[in-house]
Structure formats: C-alpha cells, structure tokens
Image 1 (cartoon, rainbow, N blue to C red):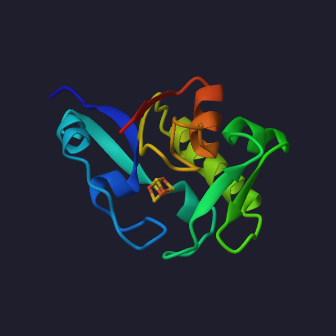
Image 2 (cartoon, rainbow, N blue to C red; image 1 turned 120 degrees about the horizontal axis):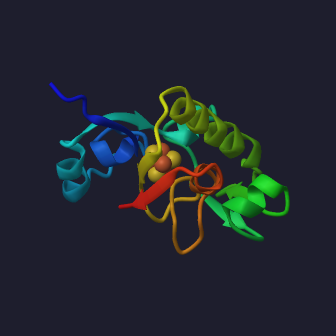
Length: 137
Ligand code: SF4
C-alpha cells in the first residue's frame, strides 16, 4: 500500500481544544483534505509553554518575521511580552517538520502564531523561511 504524504496541521483545526479560549476551531474543508494525508497536529503556542486557556495575544510593531528578527513583539491582553514563548513554539514546530521531512503545513488563519493574513504569524513565518509550504484555513 502506498504511504500517505505527511503534513502538519494546526491542532485547533482538527478539533483539539488548544485555542487561547480553551476551544477548538474545526474546519470541515481542512478535515476533508487531511483524509489524503498522514497528519500531525501541532499547537505552537502550547509547544512554546503557554497554558490553555491563556490571554489572547497580538502582533505589535510588525509581523512574525519581525518577531523572529527582534523588531516586533507578541503582546498579550495584559501587556505582557510573550515573544519568547511564541518563538520557542515556532522552532518546536519547525523541528517536528524537519525531523519528519515534512514540507507542507495547514495552518489556522488570523492567528499571531499560525496566521498568514492580515499579518503573517511567528510560526508561519519561520516555516516559510525554511521552505515549508504553508496553506491557510
Ligand atoms: Fe490553533 Fe495555532 Fe492558535 Fe494553537 S497557536 S490554537 S494551533 S491557531
């Protein structure tokens, strides 16, 4: 039997309750697409050490590339700088992708970690920078 191609996917898109508010965000089209893959769910914010639930965060002074470069920040609702945890989580996701030789990732839109727009998130930026294709849901 032919082995399915592997991919990573934002954990919350698969129905896992990893979001800042302790909920999930299952996406029917994404779940349908995943039937053709062997997929690994990842939540960069949890992998970075943040709890669930957690205060929502925003990108400030730039995008995910800026956070990685040290010119932008991820700030939570209370004004605490969470950039370090976001960067740590992004590198954890990258390590999983590289260890499994994965070159495709389905990520949740409108997230300071996983989003591609309106601003690219920290994990999405790091994966793109390392040549991993990111598809947004
Ligand atoms: Fe979903 Fe990504 Fe947010 Fe985790 S960091 S809850 S995977 S959007």
